[in-house]
Length: 356
Image (cartoon, rainbow, N blue to C red; front, side):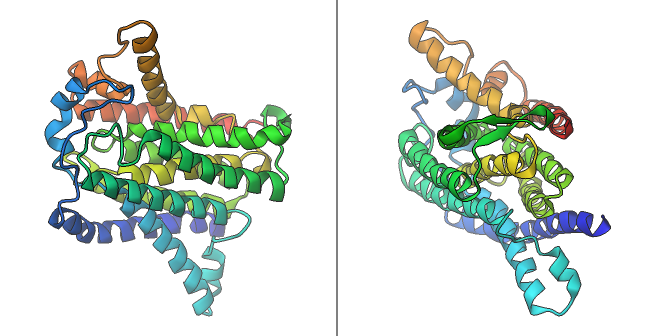
């Protein structure tokens, strides 16, 4: 048991240290090359204007670098590769036991982390070079969702064809049989989680929420004896905490698409890995663990539908965290209360996941 705990926690510490060490160099690069938006966005998701958002964030929107998410996936990847190579280059059995890069548990989530990061990085670069007037990102929402859908479709087919996953776990050890519908279900879950990436809008908000969610799934995977997957999740947590160290007010950079896209896709894969494959129900508890993302996405959908069919807004501005800002809440208060909700919902989700 001590070896398993070490296998999970030590990579998290290594990833944190690597992230903290590399951040000053990365920050210097971002500021030297002025890698931030050149103009605040002027078009909302529904095609309308963004006067309230600009009144709250106009100055910081164009003066704070993007691409902060590079710290998260880069520190995670370096940690994983470092341990993997050390396990093969040294005679010490300790490193063999510490290595958690495995085909059955971590290859797929690592692949989605890197793919999401690369696509998000490309989108961020486009936005930085563009005029900043897009709804969100250099690529249109439709293009980004298409790419997310394609990546998740490949993962879904792998689960369905290669791993024979045809349903999702439920309480009591039962399975909700989906058959071929598992494939579109996987895609929809992934796209829904990605839509929650709009939570990246306040200093420290996204980092704290993602760290909490991956901690929850690390605990679930550990309980299922999927120690490699638990170590992978813990590594992401360590790297995210390094990012958060520099992202608390005043933030040095924003996570942006290269971070949020990588993390949301990977979170979906991890949730499915802790489902029937782990003889659990990691998907059923996902809306609870990811409650902050759920309510953020829901607020945007409600706002769009209300403006379209009722001709008026429900919130002063969407997503919900900006609504609280518009009400006069300081940004740090919104962030910390989101953190509290995130921790409580994650703990509750873990409890539900442990019920047999």
